Length: 156
Image (cartoon, rainbow, N blue to C red; front, side, top):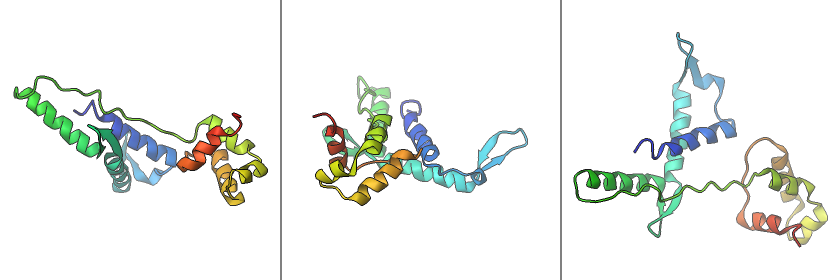
């Protein structure tokens, strides 16, 4: 089970790194020169991991949390091990990583003239903050209606 769901922990750690949430003070160097988490760092990792477990995924035609899916899969595995179930299927659900901050989308935002932005019904302030986000190194997200209009811009 650990290996099958390891990606949840990996994604939590990558999210913390991308957000720039971890500081030097979150780690301590041991006598053997390895790094260990201090309580502050462990708390950040735990909170991000919990957020990942609480994020939603469609499974068995329901909107479930990854934590619930993990519990169901553990139950399926235990039933398989005691002979109550013939198979265990780990390929579903599939984690879908939807990122709004691709280089192409960043370029579209930076190149967007205010006049065309206004014609789409958005404010100057929204465009300003989106351009700031697009120019930064940090990941960002967009509201669905903004993303849809941006994706359509320049394709006509």
